[in-house]
Image (cartoon, rainbow, N blue to C red; front, top):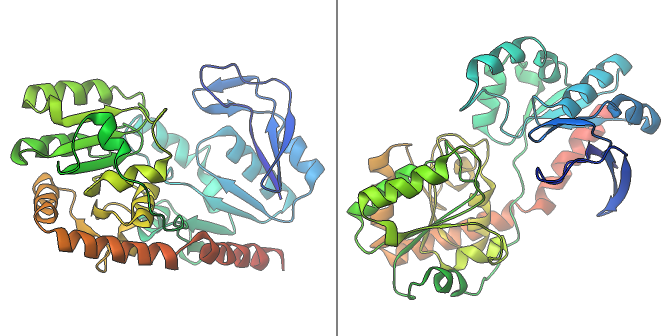
Length: 343
């Protein structure tokens, strides 16, 4: 397997102009020379030349509206190489520059999706987006992401970091601090949840939301109970969940929601909106699935905080889902898709 990507590793570091190859978990990763970029989108003119040399049997294009994927898909169509398109939640225009995205999707990027032999959706949520975007129904395959292996994390480190004792109720949110994640809804629940703390752990998405959340918690008088933490220097991600009474994913839209899969592997009780793709896998007694509404989110949190046996029951059921949908169970599904395309 060969993986082709840009040489971007950090927005604060200039991308490499020369290509290099590294071996990662048995795959050859080609970091292609990247003379220009727009934020994380690297312009890598070497994509078609690199693909010509490798002569792939099948191509897997990840993401949407970027140079590498667009160029690779165009090369595959010209060379009649079958390819899989996996949008990673980027297919439907969301949040910013909606009008521009719609114009580009209908012109420059349209064939990336419609020209693929298989369009991979990680959930029913994403399948509907692909259908609405013009992808033929028979070409769409749902293949969920794998869950991490169940773990037993050591409790105490996160609570020690934010300065609360073991008895203080703690809500946890993990992931980018960005619009559409419902973080402002979580902060707004706290005035009606006395004594409850909220830890939001994740990098600043650059949308100005971190500043807004800081202002919101001050205005609501809950600054001492809302903890905004950068992930650097904290525990490994899967260890974070052990301290939480409830993990909450209050997103307006998520094609999947890997952080909920992590919480499931840790056995943490989960509250999740029905806008998240992974909710369908947790709906049957492994999470509290609610509409994307402030009152529904608040009521679910209050109910679980007042019912320790229910939290334990949901956490145990979520662990069972993580065992059943491990990466070991998902990989054969992916292999079957590739085999079908090269026959």
